[in-house]
Image (cartoon, rainbow, N blue to C red; front, side):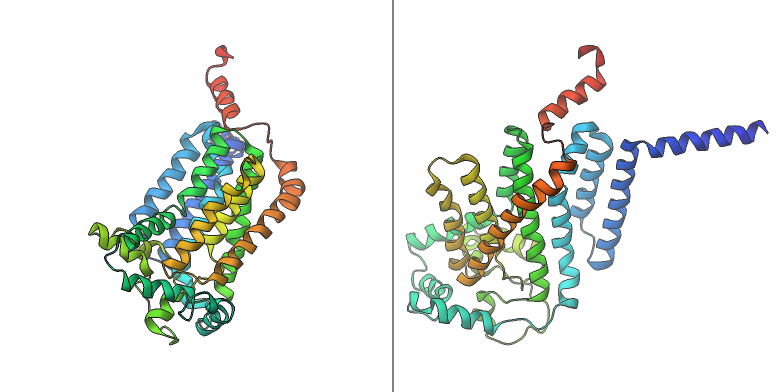
Length: 345
């Protein structure tokens, strides 16, 4: 009888442990990690970076205390987008319909073909690069555009960290992060519903439908690799570009446009300076033969739509009700220290 009571008490204690809010959070994260690794194993081959990614999430959830959990909660949109984008390599070929190859090209030609002697601006830059193979100007543009392209993913993370941690402005961080989250969601849906070939594909293969997996999708990024005698950008691009036919909308336009709009409205100053980043990204995308101009316009329109949706719907209707914006990352560190050393508070 006593043994049964002991077991019952232990079960009740265990149940109370599981019902604690902190433990529910940890369990939810662990279940999420298990589901993530299972899906990765089913859809694509598990890579070492997947395991490392899961361990980082586990460490922040279980060992990160209050501040680590806030970081995971606030940065979750980036985590989910990376998971979804990475998994696209396992589902894009299965679920997408016929690749739209000729239509984007024809629209580009009709709208912007007059800008250059070539059929479209992207092809003009390819011809120009071939004519100026060893020139200083080509080398400059190769290095400049490749670096602009390389900061595509780090840039919003850097800006986000500055807003979230350095400036301790959680409300504006949510405006930025969920603008990009809505943009990402709209883009992923469009990628699946309207798979579009980039100009490099037309330049190299014409209007023929792809018959298998294309391992080479770096476009003119290979010029930078030739300069340094390595395959750094080609390897990174071909490894992490999970969908070669996701040209519309261009996130290389959407991200810079969203960031420029956010920084303009948040910091003001010389407003025109914020336009330089998206302008450089636009030029780089066309120069590198990765996007048509129409891709870039659509990407920017998506970004402005996502910003408005976040500002006028998500923030006031949802996050103002469930998020304590007065409790920023620095305040949470103080709360955590006081919880660990109450005598110091």
